[in-house]
Image (cartoon, rainbow, N blue to C red; front, side, top):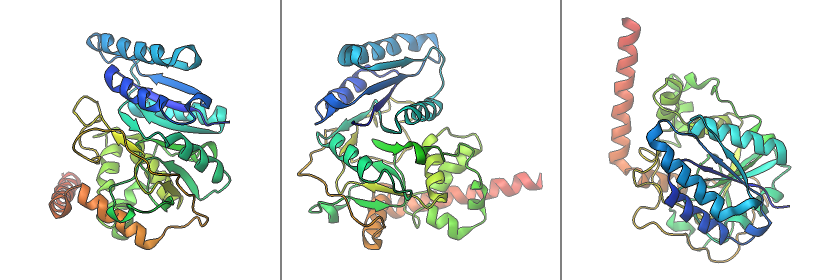
Length: 312
C-alpha cells in the first residue's frame, strides 16, 4: 500500500491549488491516502482566506480525503508535530508536504520506493524529495545519503519519528563545543546552530531544526534524490515562515522536471565527495563568503549579548 500523504495548509488557497495540482499529476497518486491538516485563524481577519483554503482542498480532493480542520491556531510547528505523529502512529509511515510546494511527476514513486526499501534500516531516518542545486549531479541516476534533514517534501517512518525530541535535549553543547558546532553547521555551509538557538530561546518556532538535531544526535541518515523533485513556490512573502529560510532554486517558480527513474543505493553510507559537493552548493545558495561573514557577525553579537547578560 502507498504511504499516506499528509498535506499541511493554512491560509493560501492559490498556493494550495498549485500544490494539489502538481500532487494529483504524480504517478501513483490514485493509490495514495490523503490527509489534510489546516490550521485555525489567529484573528477574525484571517478566517475568509482560511475558509477559502479549506474549500480548495475539499473541491479538489473530494470525499476520498480525510480532513482535520482546527478551530484554534496551533502554529505550523505544533500542527506538523501533531499531524506527523498521528499519521505515523496509524500507518507506520507518512509522506509530508506543505501548501507551497510543486512536485515532479515521479515524486510519489521515488518516495514510496525509498520508504519500502529502507523501512527496516535504523540508520535511515528520513527520505527527502528536495535536493540542493549541485551541478556535479547533473548526470547522476542514483539517490544518495546525507547526514542532514530538509523540510520541503519529505517522508519518515514511525520508528524514526518516535525519537523526535521537541526539547532538543543537549542543544546547549553547541554554544561551547566548536567541533560539534562545525559538524552541525556542515563545516560552515549553513548556520543551523543559530536557528536552533533562536528556537530554544523563544525567538523562532521551527519543528524542522529540532528534527534535524534529533537526527544529528542519533547519527541518522537521509536519502536524497540526485536532482530535486520539489520546488518551493512560497518564497514570495505570503507565508508565515516564508522568510529567512534556506533558499530554493530562485527565479521563476516551476514544477521540477525528472529524467528517468532514480536508483536506490545498496550501501547505507555517506560518500565524502558527494557530501562535500552538497555542502558547497548549500554554501553558494546561502550567500557564499558574504553569507558566512554575516553569520559570523551574528554569532559574535550573540556571544557579546550572552556575556553582557551573565555579567548583569
